[in-house]
Image 1 (cartoon, rainbow, N blue to C red):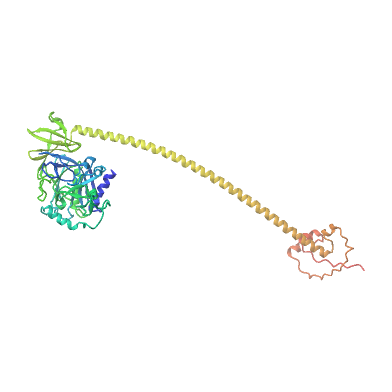
Image 2 (tube, rainbow, N blue to C red; image 1 turned 90 degrees about the vertical axis):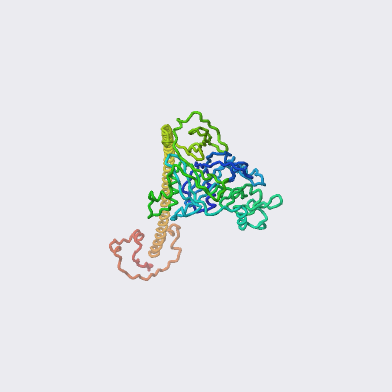
Length: 528
């Protein structure tokens, strides 16, 4: 989910934001041996981690708990998915009861159980401490993976000495008048406390939980702020037994990261055997600096063996729920006459303890024929369902494509019609502009022609002495006007133009009107 992914990256970013996630298995599990001990704050159960009575109180037995495995290029993270029940069982400080707000934390968040650093590439993992040194797998078809972890080279120190060293890095009491997490001012009813992880000053309401801090050798519950709860490891650094259905992929990726192959290095079986070991029986190494009541698997031997198919089991098997382990069931049966407790988690290998040994049982053939048929039937059902879904999606895509094509064709025809209307309007506009322009040109030419004719007629009349048409129309008498002698000097003769020489001369007035280049007439003289 989105909340779980955010919680996962929040934990990784707390250590190194540059780490790249390579592998995630949210359906993994971890085998933990139940150890009954008495403690001041454990209530009869194991006091490790941040959950009160996290492990069932059994004198001898093992429990399987759900885990989330995350592998990056620098470390291996073992996380726990918290539920509403898990939050209600969170350990509070010895003097501070759990608040109602702390019990209502949203489920789905992840709590870091253990961060295991990977060895540096190019160095032998056997020479490094506090890192993952190897992986042990069995030769059967089981889901069991043993992580061999080299403990850090340090001795067990008293808690007082460890706290004295941590106090040097804590913030001073008078450095802040209010809580650095909630902003609540410190008072008599809101006391200041130091978060054991961040060293900041926090109030009581912002530090309601306690947690083990094995990385700094604090193996008793310590007060931590709510802002860093679940970000640091709470399980000891020791050999761990995991159950994962993807163990081959997980082991291969771990080997690749531990060996650090380059372009010139070729992984050989001999080189791979330095990281991955195949054994059906292996013993978990005890960690000297971890107290026995805190260790999850205190140096026990693990044996993986094949058992008959489930149909061959005795019908007297009775199944009852296991305390504190939702989804698991506890079965008590007889194996070779010895009473054993069998804890089964659905989807994983069965684990049982017999004679002081942890025995992990798996099918002799890896998987039964009935399981193969059921898996094949489920596969065919998934294929048919996927094919049906693909056909439905293809039909929907065809329908959407047809609707989209019809809409596009309609839009194309609409654009084409609009383009035709626009072109027709532009054509009419051009024609109208041409008609207007031609009408203006004709009227201009007519005005110019009439002006030329009037001027020529006036010149001809002045030369011939005749009345102009305007004078004749007015009915004026020329006798009443005094006659004046018009003496016009003779014009010099010039050579006729080529066009005029070719044209016949005529004394008609029409020629004068048409040509407008009449030679000068003789000056009329009055009779004596």
